[in-house]
Length: 409
Image 1 (cartoon, rainbow, N blue to C red):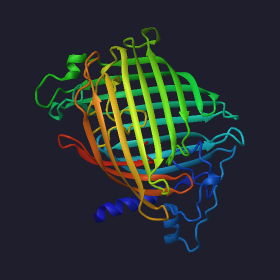
Image 2 (spheres, helix red, strand yellow; image 1 turned 45 degrees about the vertical axis):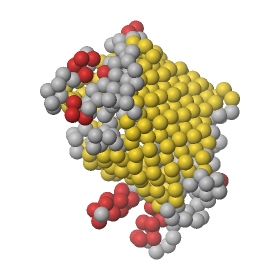
Image 3 (tube, rainbow, N blue to C red; image 1 turned 30 degrees about the horizontal axis):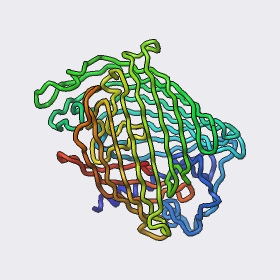
């Protein structure tokens, strides 16, 4: 218990940014749609206030810093932990700016990580808004050296069929969204996923692995065009308390664009947030995430899989890649409640369920539940960014600690 407390304090200390502008805090998670005038910071407390009270004699200011046309750079070292990586050391960077005084905040976010499992990851995400908010350009780059096991296809796969793998992974994605009306945006984009130097050692129990049956390859390419849509009425994209988010992505991968095979997929992402009870600050959140292969044979590592969604959060309670298949249906409910009146500490309880088919053309298999509790520590009261520490449980003895910056959905 004492070690856990020291770990949380260390996280808080590491959360102090080294910024290009003094007294300017930029959260790791962007805040493009937050209406700061509606946020009461006078009675709220975050980790910055706590640390300030310990190391300084004067109270910290509650004044909201504003991001202008000049880019603000922040660099943050941090520790993290996940089942798939174990302990990880990260150096995260953030650049935030506005393209015009009234535009939403544009961000470029990156983090370089090295894990106890000898994984190296460098994701770079960007969200650039036009000066009149009519366009949003969303980009992503992933550079991974990623040893990770697979356990076979379908949600009925057994954890004893572990097949250790290793590969290098590169992703490039760029999507342009155009405002159609109100909060509805639609657009198109391009995504390429490239896996190279793929190796596997075979299952630890000697059974022929589903990876070998599906079709092993030393490298694969999925290159395709996308059609996208988004509707968003959330009061905050970081820590919503009310509103609705819904998006779709249809992806068509073509050999003419360099793909290993021709295949297409559809992702449907819907989230709803309600205050419960209505007069409280407590929130009940619902999430539905369906990742469906419509036709063709995607490369094995591009199939839908646990915790391989865009936010790598769908499937708490299980290791990343635990379940994999042509179709993924996922649902989760989380109840978020306050522990302290000043907002510094909160708690959550969550329950989720996921079901996968095996190879394309097969039916969905067993529903696999996940559940657990968590605590929230307010990292930044203006953006409502939390340090999220959850302990998840699943079937076949699956369990583990999950640490994130920002709410998982």
